[in-house]
Length: 170
Length: 101
Image (cartoon, rainbow over all chains, first blue to last red; front, side):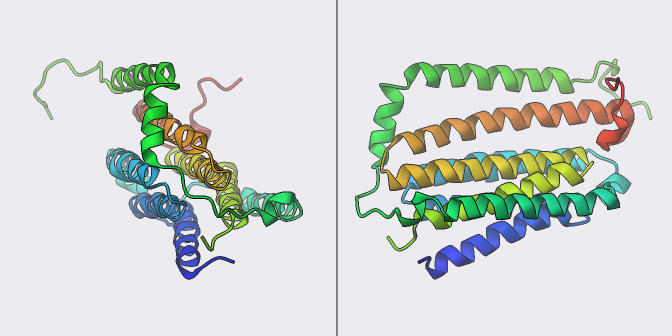
């Protein structure tokens, strides 16, 4: 059975995930998304994987959420506060979500993983570091190249070609 | 350890459902990116949870790779949104119609 910390974390995570999608202001929405990502980091701590939790905090809460926040600030103010959605599709979307949750949830509840518990000690993060540098080293180098390429590509995509000089004229 | 695997998997299913709702209902490009982030986090939670209960170090390793790739994906996605916003002066995906057949 789940303990109180788990229940509090799941309320925070799921509640702020709903708030991130439903709050009227995009700025508050991205702050609520930070709550979801931080709650997932808390789940990682509960699962005895502190290295992944710290990575999640550094990458998601530290950089991705701040990047989203800065992008939101670049958008016009009336677009930030306007909800863009169809009323008709909203009910269909809620029905789809409920059907999906009930179907997948009942499949999982009837499957064999309901009884899985473990008494074994958690994986030491030193083993993960050793794995990274021995078995997974080609994947690590490939990941570094992908990150470099994608960040460079993002910078090139977002570059303005219509600005001739540095000074603003207006 | 008092929490069982099924608890974490159910939270992950709930997050996946919320993400699917956001992707299907919202037309705001940034909110659709939020929904994608929520789905990716549900997948990472599943990876780490199964890796803890097996127990095997592969779950955490794959989750770390997944987080790094998600960071790259968000950078490219946000710059695409900025380019589209500059072209159309809007972030409604129904207005991005130059590729529409």
